[in-house]
Length: 133
Image (cartoon, rainbow, N blue to C red):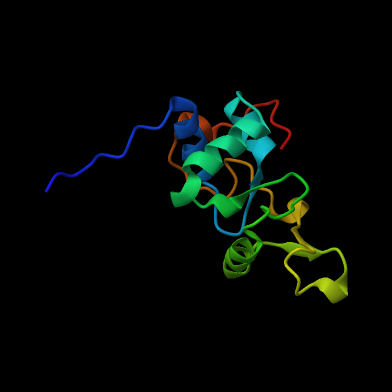
């Protein structure tokens, strides 16, 4: 039986997933945060990489900058957020159970590389001075 090797990812996509895989459970980065951290591309390029290649990654940890859930994946994302303890906020208390009205509390959930990580270097452990997050 022949084993098929998965195709190599384009270098930019590989860098996106190296960063996405480091986001701790219960924390998130916005698409634009990822692009800014990498110093290339933009939110759309990160979104394209996630959509095309991200099935095996913790995709729910990369979100819109307003904390809104990925359309079409709200239930699955909400289950992951609840399991991981990701800080959420509801737009209206009475709609709290409705995943469409919930958002991630970006002030509490946003992660910046270097936070909450154990020591053990790599070039990406240094926070760029222009990274506003």
